[in-house]
Image (tube, rainbow, N blue to C red; front, side):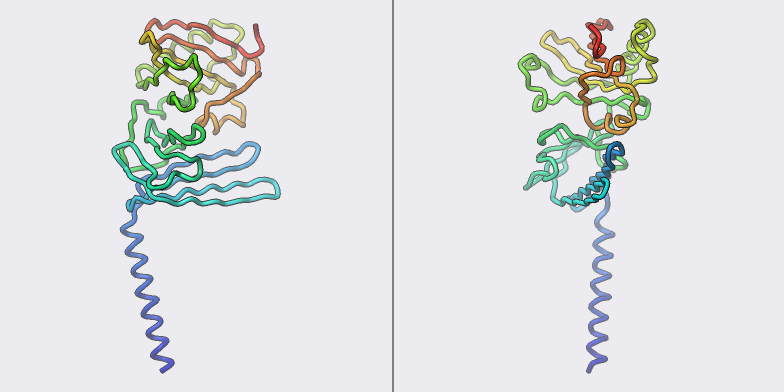
Length: 254
């Protein structure tokens, strides 16, 4: 009787194992995105979407004398290049919606502007810019939720394409060659936001920062705020139609 029970138990285990294998075969990865920081401490975040409309988000934090791993799971709805967290928000940042755009997944309505770099995907991605052709550039979307000051009320986002970004790159390079207060153009990381103003002009808001170690990864994911830094912290606005720079500000210089 004992032998029969053991055989029966082994058959159940074998059946469960085959069922799990079958489930794993049916559950394919549709998207993997990452967000990695390695400056003051190390953070590794991974967001994965599966073919059964589920997702898994993992965050690994490593500090001196402290390590932490958190995971978040949930269900989504996919429509073209848009993702809805439904029926529950994405717990990590409170987002209800994300879009796949220019090589990133952007969480458009969370607590803070947040995005992750797409490593691989079979989903539709709205790519107007080939980010691999523009090293040291990060192109951000202007979202009203995070840019709601009085003077920004008339602004709308404008999506740049490759040709427009090539034009911007050429204009900025020429300005940096002429302006003796600035460093070599290739020494900077460039964060770009394009907006359409009330006059229907396309204005390029450009922040440029020296390639400091603590920015080399994070500049891709978040717009950087820096109060000082001299000529390692440069802000300018460019009218894309006239190809003229409206003004330039170098931190700490009148």
